[in-house]
Image (cartoon, rainbow, N blue to C red; front, side, top):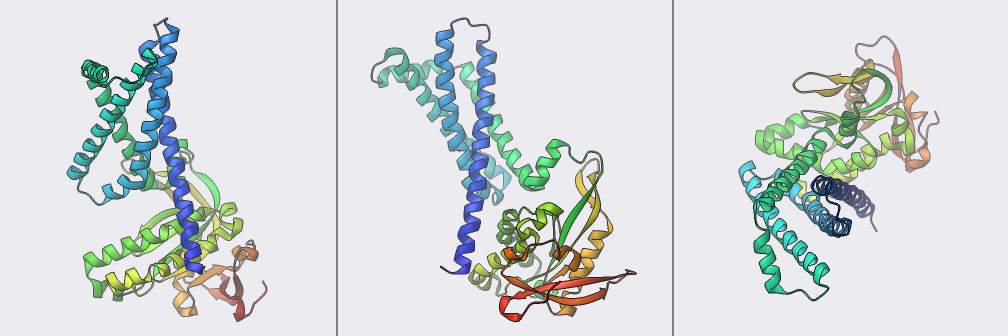
Length: 372
């Protein structure tokens, strides 16, 4: 099995695992919502036997709905909806939701009939129950769960907008008050971006960047990275230091992203007649982290480490390497997780700095090693 095939299977497994967890969360939340509705409806009903029967049937139905609809949204619809006009997306969501609601409603009526009569399902009786069930209560439930479905889709979009880790931090209110953190930052910049942009034109270049970042993103998620921001053809990725040095995540992230892009070389050649290649600079240090803004709130990092990481990245061409890492950071990373060896580049004076910084890069094992 080739390296690229192995990486592809690894990231596909990671992506599928994350999606399955999302589906299970959707199912759990929908089940809790349904239980709340049952409690609200039957709180004053003392017929406990009937209530138990309704609860069991309702839970079974909503679990089926949560699993099927959740899987459809996460594995299928979420990707399609990104490429559709909003009006078209709304139409297909309504059509899909209505179909699912009527199927599940029919299934529920059939289960109630079986539980009440202990006999085989009678289609005529089922049709009669279905007709009787289509009333104001039915319409209310239809609209209620339609809103829940749209809120679920909105939740998924917002989570993707901020990124899984950042979104959870927003929900927790972790950075409502600024706090001091030690973080790793990796600035990645597309090589020869000006030349590529001029050749492709604005629209194709935008699509090229979008494809590049989309294909490379699983490499970030698999190494616990947080996408801080996109700046044109540059992407900034961050880790809490303990997360970034764990299993060499901050270094492996770069090589994982590069491998994923190389695996799609045929696609980029056919579509854009060029290959995306990145250069990156990695550094760590203390920052002040907090939410900023009123209308468009963001989690913002403030500290000299960002400027330093950016300037380290700007030296890649001069140093004839694709990756530069500060020596102090590299000393905290276990090289056993990397199929690479270190090469010292000496002490470098960065633009705008008063002190030199020791930089290293990584090379293949057969190119020799420099101890640090």
